Image 1 (cartoon, rainbow, N blue to C red):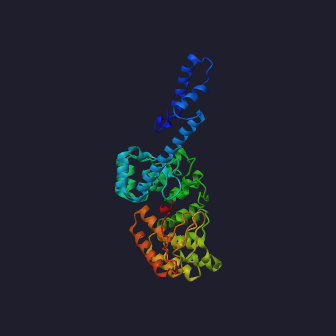
Image 2: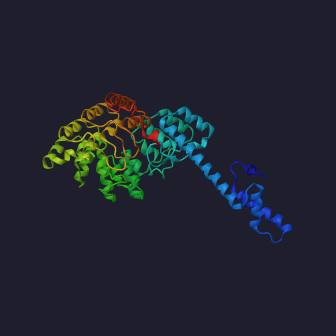
Image 3: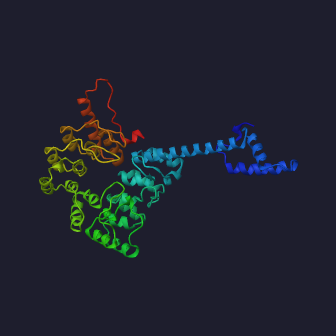
Length: 405
């Protein structure tokens, strides 16, 4: 009997039961027959010379099916992240269970569901579709460093309010991000600090009010504890821009150390000038330039460049992306032009995705649906074409991280 007599997805447990039935049959004529004899008979019935070969075939079919299912989920999540709503709708029509599927994030680490991607992408049509198709507003967050959809959408009022209307759970981290001091106080009194902190650092990084900072410190949250990416709470708060300025000042008053990078993010040139007078080398530190770029502080970037800072400054591991990558991702065309005029390399590649600044802009366009990123990508492409000295006739590869998966 040929191996094709097996079903498309053979079940090993069913075959084991078939072998036991075969053993009962054999013992009617061969009282001393053993299970191995029955297993061999079953294997040969399906075209295999041994039970071991049959089992190996079944295991491989199972692994192939799992790989196929993973591919389906990866493709589906990629469509959600890229805003390909027709493809997402068709996939859910064909297999509604995909709405709960968990798979690798299309652009960075961790495993997510469609709701996480929709909550962060800024596309209302996609957000509404995944909710309409039954996405859990609380998400499955264990494999995404415990980031809930509500945490992701906390700064998007429309998405945030819709999740809350549908019953999204508000835990301590969500209450911190929502600046809900009453809820923060209530939860800390009732439950204390949670055993797990998203990102592995201090909960103070999620505080959005000075009251929350003080209550967390009273409850025992560390003032200075790096998260998995080496970011201190004061650094995280400085990345909030104007909203973070009073929080950073409060952290300093409570004893947190502020580096020149924090003042660069806040646009505090007075503080930077004072620090540079004591230590002129700070103006050439990559972390200071990257902080100014990330916060889109053009006046600080100009001040640093005028004092010898590198337009090709890079961040630390694992990404090692340049200032131009960061400006392109932010969709800041004027900042991109400023860096290019100062000698930034438009073909520099980051270490994590092996992509150029134009590639980062295109990926940011997919992730955030920000049309400014399209303008930046087009400008960078045109700049490369106008200045390229490569005589090989080839074109620069400026694909984004998603195209290099």
